[in-house]
Length: 469
Image (cartoon, rainbow, N blue to C red; front, side):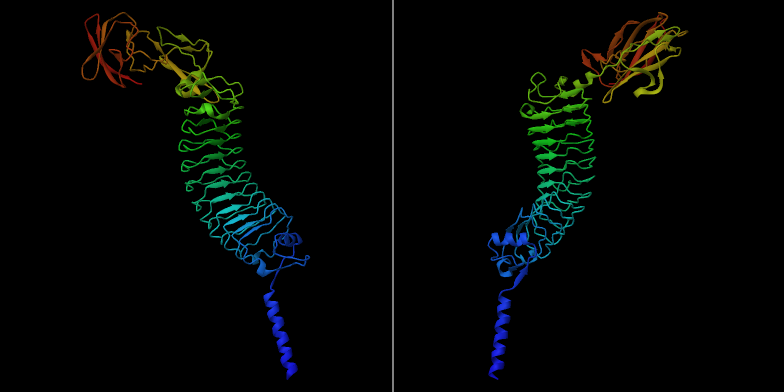
């Protein structure tokens, strides 16, 4: 009986002892060594660590330890911060570490990660891995997401309304919706497959790098706090940063820019690079005569102070209206080509073509970026006493700038012009230069105006015509 009692006491003592010295299996020697170095284990490497030494740890930094296997991390149940970056991990199971708010595992070889249960997660840095997908739709408290240099094709951050930092460069993402991330401050999405980027709702955005994509249009007019814009190697044909007075760095080189508006009231203090935009014809700046010498510009020189001035950098031939009794032969052109319709449409006409019917001829000149057009009327007045135009466009562009009656037989005595209320605006002699659409030095608006033509026979012709601006 005494022997039996003694045996039971020994068994009880053994069980108590085993329970109080519960062990966590840590098969990776480098992981165990890191825990020994941190004071959470002792002695020689034996693949076990006392669970009681680790289950209360809140912060664990084991970065750069050549660890391949994090088995045992599941017993770090109180972890708030885990940094296992710069190792050789191919797998990371953190399903037991539900209190994590910061997780860093960048520069590993991880192909899958489940963070859907980490509802308190605020920081997730997982760049330089092999992740083909990443689901953060359940991480509503996420503030910083750094997931560049992976294999991502899709990234949904529409639920991450607290997101302040998002970097996803060097992936294969073709579209990203950040319209709901209203407090986003930093976005890095370069080296992807983006063709469009809507940042109109990101009013707090101060840093944007979207280089090496296929973006064709970028509107920064709502991003008043933008200080850095890096968008080189895209397909931008125009860029306007006139609404970005905080801009201190702009690199829009290697695009297909035709026009660039830098006039934001503060561009003298910005580092600007717009080199290798071979079609660029015009740059709008604060002061065309004081362009900073540190700008990288490829010796560009066409600086202007307004968008309107950019229209002066493409030429088109201007020919006045032609009045003839027979026909008209088209002369050679230096700038532009002849067409029978506006905008380079209709039939193309050539130098030397003979025009034998009354018509409007268009001269259209086009470059990669811009186009410009003029037109003139050919009036064949054989057997016609006079010609009264139905409209004119007094815009000082050399085309239809005057309303002019052509008196082919000297049969007109005088011409008077009235507004629709009967007020006399202009008195014209026959075959004069015509009316320029002004009254007492003031430009008159687009409207219909009335004419009274008195012939030498005292007969009167009345009608109306249009002024178009």
